[in-house]
Image (cartoon, rainbow, N blue to C red; front, side, top):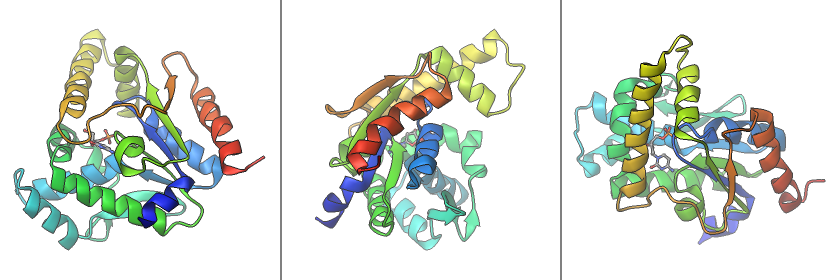
Amino acid sequence: MRWRLLASRVIAIDGPAGSGKTSTAKAVAAELELAHLDSGALYRAVTLVMLDAELRLDERRIVEAANSHGVGLRDVHGSFHPFVDGFDVSKVVRSQDVTAQVSQVAALPTVRDWVNGVLRQLVADHPAGAVADGRDVGTVIFPDAILKVFLTASLEERALRRAKQEGRVDIDGDGVARLSRAIQERDTADASRAVAPLVAAPDALHIDTTQLAFGEQVAAVVDKAKPLLGIA
Ligand code: DC
């Protein structure tokens, strides 16, 4: 299969919600001049279409709607953003409505096949290669990726990072506990589903980012990737 040959130009970064995989993948891609593909953003864009069209969890109709509404990732000044009907939906896909539903949509096998096909095509079309992040990039989408990374962090640290990301600077202990519960529910849903559950590839490099500064976790991946990509 063609995408298997192409996978030698892919760095896969997987991990649970809030582990820092998307921001890390983006920074690694910028440093190595590769495309950054956020597979979660694609699941979120599909979920947005499902909610707008009130399709519930009918996987055949969801995939039809994803095609007819032109769901995909497009290069915006060197960074790939989720698009629907020609509009950049980067912000709206992070809404609470989408976040609350996306795990259920991501558990549908037909939707997963569709997302995997879109990502493999994007890599095939991108000559430099890509850093792709998600839950099953190294295990299912690109099992031959040149480097597989599994990022983790403690639940509390992940909740604090999410709160910061969402601009909730004055969040109290109860707020962090609520956010932790929501993240844990999503982790459990993602890790216990029948198809492509969240699990580290056996050959993945594990990085616990709880105590790491952002620059340190990016450097850990870049340093490992450079020799594999033949970069000095
Ligand atoms: O990383 P995120 O929170 O944006 O991901 C959104 C959802 O999509 C999350 O519930 C897990 C799912 N997902 C997945 O199942 N497989 C991927 N490769 C990426 C995301």
